[in-house]
Length: 398
Image (cartoon, rainbow, N blue to C red; front, side, top):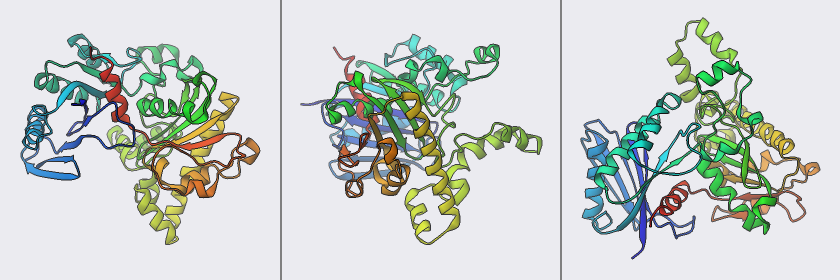
């Protein structure tokens, strides 16, 4: 029987989970996937998917502990839970590792305390991650639990990229620097590029573009991250589904002085801006429909998105000096033909040339989308953060 890893992503009012065989490749579905949502509500929901089946129940879910416990019961009822499956380890996605964690860590009480100390850097995410860790350790006490940090991959960034031009004493006091996010995805995708190029990783300069509802890019030299677009928080960088990305910080002062509270500005920048703020929608499929209907706001949002993406690609080309590959990943990056085409348009002078036919193929695994005479190779590589976390967790199993 295959040994599986339970991968948990615990949010403030939901828990995403998968049972993953770490030996499978990235295009294969997980053995089980599920979602516990509306935790703390009378109409809580548990979704479970396995072997082509989908089960959904609605019932009160008092807290994370009862939600996880009920999800395990539901899995066992259908023969896909801890009583029936060999769970070798549990991998936990932890959003912020600060400067303390540069790689996955075997979870102990001391490690949980250190993650708790980082709550000021991720007040919405790390507390929920800790709850998921604590409750799953009670339910599965006899297997290793491993924390995998979104920020870990970016520990290699040089000070010129990691530090902000802010007063040094203030920056040090409040741990303000560029941490970067989506690190598990950028690392997972970038590690597949050497095989696609048939070159050693240490010889490759590449740009990875994680384009989902949240979006970020990274410059990677010899397998090490040297820059990334997200910063102290996931609000920085590219225009996103509901987040602004980079704006003049003076906008925040201006809004505050004109009567908006800090919480209102936070909500505006994180949840009511980006594609949604400009066009009214943050789903690229709906945005495309509106563009097809000649909606000027949809077109404006799309063009802003592409412009910001090209700005970062261009700056990373200069930082790397020589570029071997550009890779698109995540929901938008893997599936939106137009974003890939338009962000790479008219770059032949820089050695980048897209093949329209290759670019139009369905998303069915890692593939080349650049022309044969393109000096810089352009790829689409599906990300699979859960598989990456599962493989890290499995590495701690004796």
